[in-house]
Length: 632
Image 1: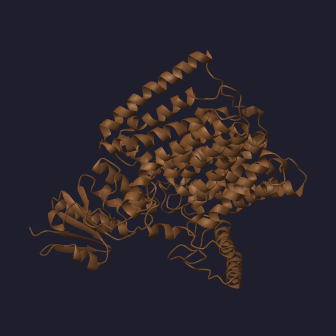
Image 2: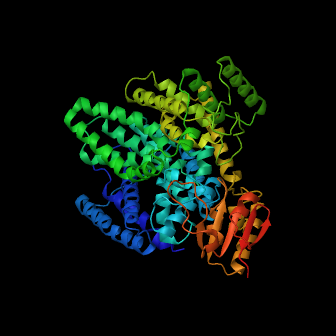
Image 3: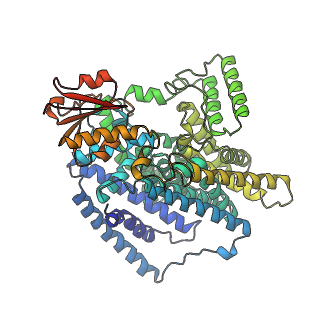
């Protein structure tokens, strides 16, 4: 892996952040500079993918040249800013000015971030969804040198929004592998912590409120687990947070064009990464538009058009491909219906909200969880709603599910969730910007429970709501913890301590990546770690890959099911030409027939493997995997 080339985007981001840092005194100037740089570089990276894809030039040499060229204007802008300032910027880190409790908060969050970085660097990608569709789609793009729709049996490789994978594609081509994939979510996690702290300051919170907001976000188990993952929930949460903090900067003034452009780019990145993020960004965009219309209607209309145009420019090409392929920019009916609520009556929305809340606030106390689930089921039936109605529950799932263990896909966060809801409720009665922001937060929550079905892994889907709500928790906690002798202060401090312990345990003992214990990243090989979710599959995949290599096959046909792991083949057969032999994508049939490949690997039922095996070929099976070879 060529690490220096992989650092080119980071170098560009650092230079841009220096160049665009705010001139006037603002809350969290350094944090704002990083937000601006992240949005600018993220938008350029996404646009570059689409532009190069249009001419089938998504290759390592082209991207190396592109990023090398990008360093030049970024460095020039930073140099101009340096000369204009006439001095090096001072970064004030008042460690000695912090109270003892504030220093503890900084050390806790910094320690968790450092531990997450270690896990992200040492562990290979081993998230279940990443094995199925997040990472295989990148390999297909690399093979075909564009991001056009391709034939596949796993529709999520082409139908799920690809914003995070666009950014990973740059790492893939610049480094030649996946060794630094986990750093994208780690950076997004750090961004979420910084953004939550800045929003708390924008809402009037002082240093303590900002640190408390950072502590609430930074110790949330699902965040600490995903910060070393190749999931996409932290990425979209970071983009939503960017839009939120940029919008709050504009509520007290007429928005200049450049600021509107940043908001539009952030909105486009949110849409391109995961459409549910718009449920968080949308209410704040409406508030921004209303505030601007009162100030200067014509400018507001122009800025609104700019925001919409930039968002469409970034997300439009993908949405257009979905429209052309499935007749709907949101993808096929079965994808939309499996995720989106199909009942919107008040009773159904209430039940869905209770389902989501039960999963978020689940604790290790089994009897309490069971009692709450029974109460929700009873209320559902009283309202004449089947608790497992597939119109309000993800297809094939049943409520409830066990969510309290530290698993990156499901981990609950009862402490942090409670602090956020209490803070949001209390600030609704406070005048000024905090009340307006709290109202927007609750609108986002309502939009989510009214449009997205309950899912067993739903806790990771609401991460953007946690990031938006944490500043509200920081504001009210800042006023409570200073009352040393009050019961409320001790309860709040105890809750924060429990939450911090939960976050630490998630990093130390979480799954499928952990620092200590059985399956530690320090005691297992990288290949073994890739299969932590399904250890018994490791021998099956290796056995088939070894047989294919021994046979001298160069073109390998791929047969699989809807939710099987494709990515291990791209790792184990890195130097082979892998061709899908199936496709459920309309208008996109496999480019080769089974008889035209040198070998076939299959992870599916016997009948399916047999159907795609040409007559006279030898077929062998080992556990869940089969391979087929032509006669010698």
